[in-house]
Image 1 (spheres, rainbow, N blue to C red):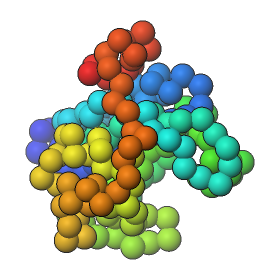
Image 2: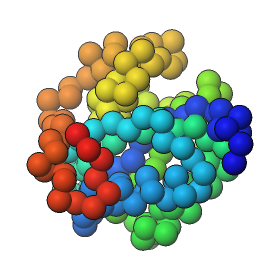
Image 3: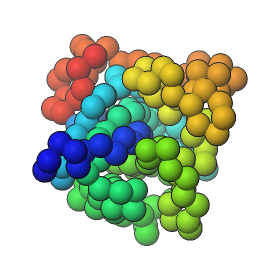
Image 4: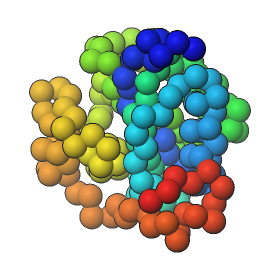
Length: 178
């Protein structure tokens, strides 16, 4: 793919709290790249408290900055296809419940989209510490909705979020280096 085709900048949040969580995130990154999405920045892995209506284990979360050869709709379809390939069945799961993989588009090249199945920027982007901590790591000057990610994060409780070190992730295939 020509380099100029990779000029659309986006941020994605990857999450997992079922099975080998770091492996699931690594597999998602590999599949994104295999589809022509170039990862330009990758945050550390963060263990984060579960959030949702049912008891569940902690998540691993990570934010990646990408150069996308496709637009937001096609990137969403790719993310959903990767989720299915990695065993996610949205039709059978509880909303905000446990999952092997979750891939959310947080922001796409400054666009604003408000459709039933695609909202960009992600409508709760600035309300979730588990997203903002890794986002600020790789894009400290990022802002959306007229507020900087750093300022939004300062107003949230991030006390349960823990950056994993290399020793905690190195044994898991596909884990990002710390």
